Length: 475
Ligand SMILES: Nc1ncnc2c1ncn2[C@@H]1O[C@H](COP(=O)(O)OP(=O)(O)O)[C@@H](O)[C@H]1O
Ligand SMILES: O=P(O)(O)O[C@H]1O[C@H](CO)[C@@H](O[C@H]2O[C@H](CO)[C@@H](O)[C@H](O)[C@H]2O)[C@H](O)[C@H]1O
Image 1 (tube, rainbow, N blue to C red):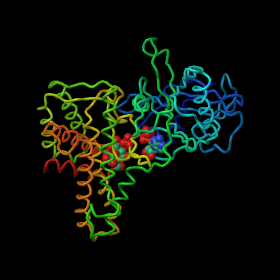
Image 2: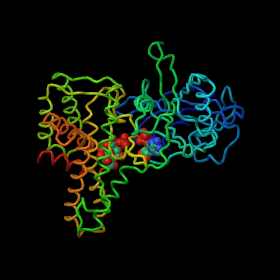
Image 3: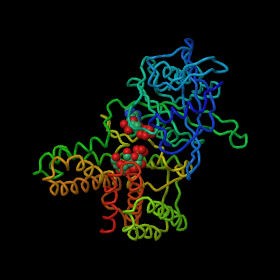
Image 4: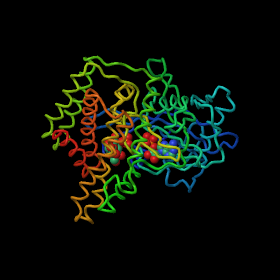
């Protein structure tokens, strides 16, 4: 007997990372894809299952989630919070199964397997029961480091090994290349200062896929743990709070001025884009392809209008921004980040690092792998600088209603100042009219996306991108 589907249904509903919560679903299939080697001690047994979830609503469709499990012969009470179920396995007999990411013993097996990939197999690849552990040269793993599961709101699961390494286990699995790995691989081999170096990754070949031709499925990546990192979003929020602490001061006079950090971020993004342009294909879109780009934005707006009632009054100005994009007869596209905002940046003692190159999680992989304009990433950051003072205002408005107008002025100054410093460092003093057209279209597209994101996830925040959309019309 292998686990009943209901075991996984109950477990998925409890996890943070399952994206189908709130939708009717059933577990359609469970597939055991391999066992992580556990060395001489052999305890616990660590296996990986792929759980296919089929949705029963009008949207329908299905997703596949990765569930690594630690199997024990007897209950492990220290892991009660990560209990999945117990059942009889053909190979292992009766087992008590726990989410392996919560279990230090199980995580040590992954760590050792990555280490063995570098040391024992020579070729930086350890191929065990179909699971392939790859290593990049340049770093010896600290096998004494204990694992700790990150507790934040994440769509994947990250485990820190002391201060040595971080492993991100991809939860929603799509066959093919995961851009988080392929982009980190290139930037690491080029010695980029603006990412956490890739130490290794785990994949598996699904021999049955693609009519028997086989497809690689990427399951996890191991990278440098950024010990001294502070989240870019948190730092920017602190900067605005400092600014509001003294109503006499302008943004450029306040102690926590963020402008030089914004400029450093602009430089970091420029450098990352330049390296990516050297190592991934770069294309010049012709007029027809530019029209397709604009069609995509129009289509996104069409869908958003059905979800966000407040967008309707701004439809014509948004369409006009996309129409201006259509007048361009050439647009350079390349590998980009694809979902950049301040929450994807980390300030370390050695400068800014950019994380999570997976692209927008809601987009299908084929779209996420397609080259896009670097201005999409720039637009993402500009939108983020706009969010920061609005979010601080939300936190203050109730307790300090008296200074609202003063704060609104300072908020504009702060956002304007940081957008300018970022943009100038990224693109130089002047951007061309064509670049402006492109940037405006991407900013509009991102703001539209955000109105949908906020409506679905944080409805009380939807005014933030809606105000930005209104400003596009007023400009
Ligand atoms: N190399 C790293 N070192 C330390 N912390 C990191 C590192 N990479 C990411 N983080 C932290 O983990 C959080 C989640 O990482 P992220 O790659 O965005 O995961 P997800 O794909 O699940 O969204 C980030 O917001 C950041 O705070
Ligand atoms: O980090 P994710 O890949 O999950 O990105 C999604 O969530 C983001 C919020 O966490 C969301 O970002 C929006 O809110 C941010 C403030 O919380 C702001 O800095 C961004 O500019 C804004 O877009 C992102 O859009 C969404 O894809």
